[in-house]
Amino acid sequence: MTLQQLVNSIQHLSGTEADLSTLLAKLKAQESSLRQSQAALINCLRALDPVQHSLGYLYLLDATGSEGLPVHASEEFIGLAVGFLQTCSTVQIRMAPDKFVSVSRKLKEHLLVLHQPRRAVLPLRTALYKLAPSSDYVTPIHAEFLQVCTLAKCYNSAVPILQADISDVDPAKTAMTPRDLMLYCYYGGLIHIGRKSYAQALDLLLQGLTAPTMVVNAITLAAYKKYALVSLIHQGNLPPLPKYMPTTLQRSLKTECQAYQEFAAGYGVKSNDELQAFVTAKQAQFAEDGNGGLVRLALEAKTKRSIQRLTQTYLTLSLADIAQAANLRDAGQAELYVLRMIDAGDVHAQIDASQGMVRFLEDPEEYNSAAVVARLATTIDKSIHLAQKLQAVNNMVSCDKAYLNKLHVKERHSRYEDTSDMSDPMAEGRLSLA
Image 1: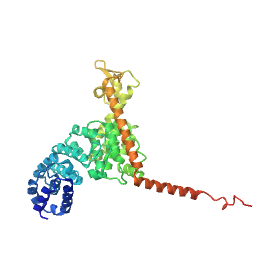
Image 2: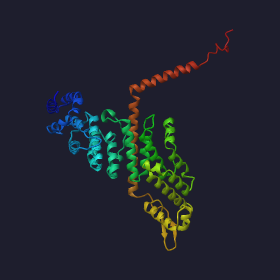
Image 3: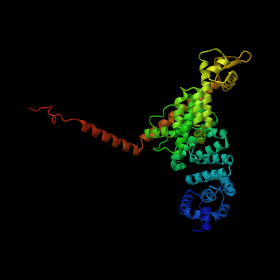
C-alpha cells in the first residue's frame, strides 16, 4: 500500500467504530513501511485533520517523531505534536494508547534536547487527561509530565495531578508498564520534595520502592537514596523497609546504598561535627547522586530538632544556651535558626533581642475553626471513598475465575497434605484387634 492509498484510507475510515477498527488493522500492518518513509510523512500529515482523523494522524506523527533524536530536535515535529495533543479526538487516540504515549514521550525528548522542558508542561498535562479514563487512573504520561515539571521547576503545575487519588492501573487502556509506575512515584516524590511536602514525598517514594520487582534497578536505587534522606529530614530516623518487600531486594539496597545507610545509622547518635566530617568524606558521592542539597537539609533538621527538644524542658532560655545545646557557632547563629523555625511554624516563641533571651510559647491553634472542621470532613470523605474502592476491588477479586481456581488448587493440596500427615495407628502397632 502506498502512502497516498493509506492517506485515502484514513480519510474514509475515520467515522464509525467499525471503520476505525478496520483502519487500526491497516495502520498496524503498515508500521514498518511508515518508519522507512519519514521524509514524506510531513506532507501526508498536512492532508489530514488532527481532530477528524486522529487515529491515522497519530500513527503517522509517531513515525516522524524519531527523526534526529537523541542529537537533534525538530521544531516542525514539536509544533505538530503540540497541536495534535491539544485537539485530537479522545475516542480515537484511546484505540492506540501505546502510540499516544509514544508521541507524548517523543515530544518531551525533542524539547529536552532543546533544554526547554517548560514548553512540554501544558501539552503533556492535556495528553494525560485525554488518555486516562478517569482521574483514578495512572498512565505513562503521568511520569513524563512530572519529569518535565521537575526539570522546569513548575512544581505547582503538578499539584492537581498528584492530589488525585490513584487507584487503577490498566495496561490495556493506558499501555502502563512497571517502569512507568516507578517513574511516576519517583518524579512525584521529587515534586513533593521541591515543595517541602515531605510526608507526601515519603509516601510516593515508598510506593515506588515496594512496586513489584525482583531486581534492583537505577530507579529503585535513586528512590531509596531520596527516601533515606527525606526520612531523616522529616522524622529524624530511617525506618525499616516493609516486610512484604523481598529480602533479596532489601539486602541489595543496603549494599548499593552503603553511604546512606551509614549516614542514617549515625544521624541520631553522632554529634553535628562528626556527621559533618562524614558528609565531607562522602561529598563526591552525594554530589554525584544529586543529593548534596538533601544532605545539608538533613543536617539542618538535626539542629532544629535539638532546638525543638528544648521547648519540652524550658520556658525561657538564652540564645547562648541554645547555641551550646544545638552545637551552633554562637548566639547569632542560634537566633537565625529560631527565627526561621518561627516563620515555618516549627516552634512558637518570642525573642527578646536586647536580653538575648527566647521565651517558648504554647501552640496558639485551638483546632476549633471552620477551616479545621472542613479539613476533617474532607479527610473523612476520602476515607469513606477509599473504603468503598477497597470493597469493590475485594468483590472483583473474589469473583475472579483465575483467583478462584488458584484458591481451589491450594486448598486441595493443603487437604492432601493434612491427610498424608495423619499416622496410621494400626501400622504403628498402637491398636490391637485381638
